[in-house]
Length: 330
Image (cartoon, rainbow, N blue to C red):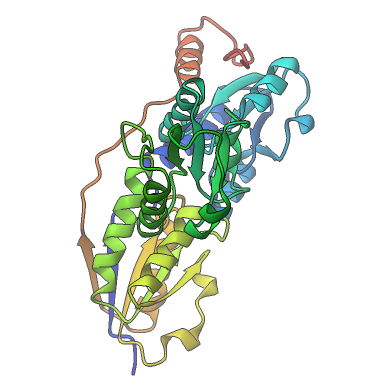
C-alpha cells in the first residue's frame, strides 16, 4: 500500500518566543561590529543553531568562554541569577532573549520562595529551562518529573507547598502529576495563570486532531527539544505511530510500508522549511493529495528586548556606535 495523502497540522513550528529569540541574534549580528556570543543553543534545534553559526554567531556552553567586556545573548530558555552575576563580574554586555513565558515562571518561583513555600517544579531535570528556574530559589525548589517521585517527597510544612511547571511539557502527563500533588498537599498553591505555554498546548491539541485521521505522524524537531519530544509522546498516547525527525533525511522508508495517510507537524523550535522538505519528499513519491488542517489560529507576538530596541534606534539615529554597551549584565 502506497502513501496516498499528506495532512499538515496547524499550528506547527515556530512560536512567538522562538521567533523573538532568533530575531534577537540576527539583529545583533547586523547591528554590532564585534563578536556576538550566545550562551547555550538559542533554541533547541540543530538547523537553527547551524544557520546562525554560519551567519557569525558564536555559541558557548559557559560564560567562561566569553572574553571580558564582550556581547552575549541569553537563550530563550533563560538563565539563573548565578549566570547573571558571572556576566556582571566579567562586565559583559547582555541581550536577554529569554522567552517572556519562561520569565513568568522565574517570577513565580521568586514570589513563592519569598512567601515561604516549598516549590515543586514539574519538569525535566537537566533541561536548560529547569536549570535556570531552579537557580531562582535553589533551597526551595524540588524538581519532579513523575507522580511516582512524589512518594518519597517530604517538605517542612505540607500546608505551604506551591507548584510551577516547565513551559514545554505534555499537558496529559502534567495533569496526572498535578492531581497527585493535590492529593498529597490539599493546600497546594498555584500560579495565577497556566505555566505550560500557549504554543505547547496548541501544538499538542492540533496533533490530537491530526492523529484521528492518519496512520503515521512525522514530527520535525531535534532530539533535545522538549516540546518536540512531547509531541511524539502525545501521538503514541492516542495510539498512533510517530517519529521525531530533524529533517527529511531521517525518514526511514520502512516506516511508510502499509501506510496510506501521513500526518506532519513540527515542534515550536523547528523552522517551516524543514516541513516543506518533507512535503517535497512525498511529492516526489507521487503524493498529490495534500491537506492542511488548522485547529487554532495563533496571533501571539513578543516584542524585542528593550535594550536591543534602544540600541538599534540609537545606531539608526547616529547617536551611538554599534559597539557601545547594550545593557547592564545584572
